[in-house]
Amino acid sequence: MILTYTNRKGVQHYLRAVKTKAGGDRFYFSSKAEGPFLDRIPEGYEIHESPNGRVSVRRKRKSLITDEELKTVEDGLKRFTSLQPYQYRTDHDRNAITAFLLDADLGQIASKIRPDLAEDHEYLSELAATLGTCTAMMRFCLLDREKRTFQTERFCFMGGIDDWIPIGQEGPLLFLVGQFVKHLGKESFYELD
Image 1 (spheres, rainbow, N blue to C red):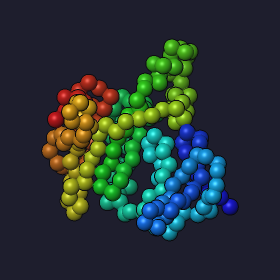
Image 2 (image 1 turned 90 degrees about the vertical axis):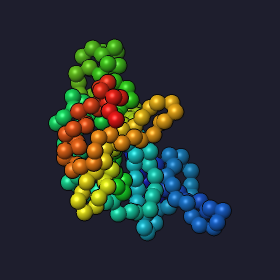
Image 3 (image 1 turned 30 degrees about the horizontal axis):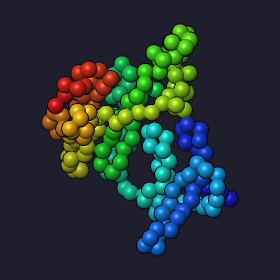
Image 4 (image 1 turned 60 degrees about the vertical axis):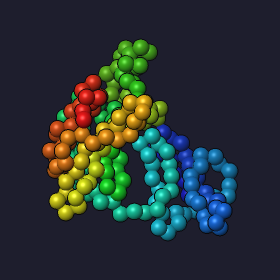
């Protein structure tokens, strides 16, 4: 049986492998239904879907981020921003939690097509899931595993920089979330340093 994975955009992906120049295997997902395919994830690997719906196979890695810390950021986005849930996503890697914002204002676009859709959050959520792309805007990087202190960073979009820059002082995640996520989606975000 072929292993398939359907991403949030509704696109079905098929697990494949190719030989590398060194003779090893490189595993990947393809949306093309052309074989040969694999029927299972290789030992030590996992499926990962990015906030933009890109599906990949990566080595399993132990995350230093706890479920509680991830929930702290997600709860902060709901509580401290005026953003609708379809307008943001979160992802985490080994030692950071990243907040992504939807690239387009789907409410504004929908209102131009049909004014009644601008407030239909269920429809906008479906639209964001299938068509929306997002950009990494802010992240919380774990600095001290024992004290559980984090450093907040925002992405800098200045032509010569285009990289993460630290903002504020390091501290407990709950404090940093309360202090900084309120700037997401606002002009004040670009003044943080």
